[in-house]
Length: 473
Image (cartoon, rainbow, N blue to C red; front, side):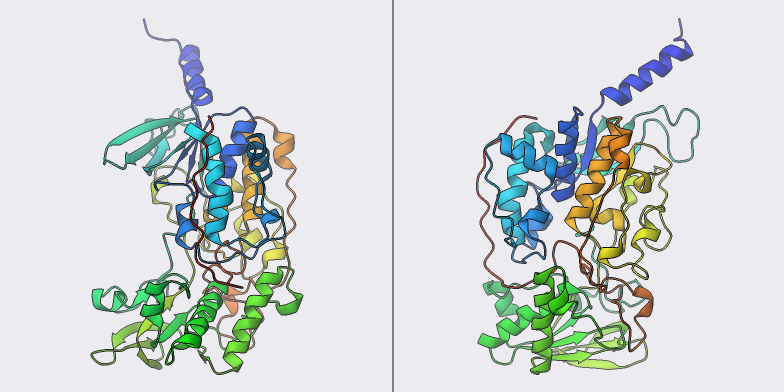
């Protein structure tokens, strides 16, 4: 005998409520989401494609963050770790990425225990049995999460809700000014001369690569400043090391940041240090340059060619720090509501638009602004900001606190979103990059002023990742 409609509906709802909340990515925001879920009695399952937590953070581990330790630890994560005897680092210190990972993020993942599954790549998310076209019965279905394990085995998991905290780190913007690769950028011989990360002045491989060479740093954000300072450090020990700072904006303007008045002192110190290097002639500045192509000048050097045929010649290496973008392809069968410019959730986009807002003027936001047409799926963390460069870890922690509260049915707590961010006014202004007197930074801002990878006050060798004890889920 066929099941009655009421019994079928009850079965579907049971699938949704009994299935875990799947979190994509074991980075700072994904792990925080799992800590909040566990604290609220939900069952989190964190899927991480790397073989350890915070793999992206570790990849830029030599870079020191703007934020202090006190601003880098999620409250629910702190409570979970303290229960397991964790000793929190001194709140006023500024960790490197490696220190953040070793002293907080990996211990947090270990405390979550079996809730974190490594070597698992999410390849797609959908409503069970429904592509994005089908309306019938859609809202009652749980999510199906398609995964590929490290050994190549593919599987499907059932999820009651999905929180995508996979970030944007693996999708850097290309060097072309129109959003596509510049002509020649994808040529293997030229591509071998291009890197998309901040060099490490204490790493022998990077010192060999950039030492004694002429390198162009393309971008105007704090990651670009960090790269320039690193090259200046290399130049101090290796003669002939030269840096060219290539900006789309008409002048440097306030790309140095808030200086002594910056509410993030480490960020201000970085800008002052880069400014001094420019003033001392250690860094050549080329402004108003919008890259159209990259080509070999001769058999040994390459040239940047702008859209208006200006040239920067005699370059040995290029460092592209022109920002990041989200990849939403794994959710192509879901009904997302994304802004057509920023690729951020449509209700969040006006609050983070870099044409209008700086780090300190982002309005409080949470589950309401992060929702989509398919209820129960959320994009959080840096990926939630799409192409906007104004993200702080504190923002992501508040996002997942609100989202998880809503998933747990505590709608009053979900609505209590409070967010106070440092204000310098240097994060916004993508629409002003052609103006010589532009007062705000453009969309080339690699990580903008506020992401977790931008600042180099003192570069040190990455801290080794220590072993920690594992807890249950």
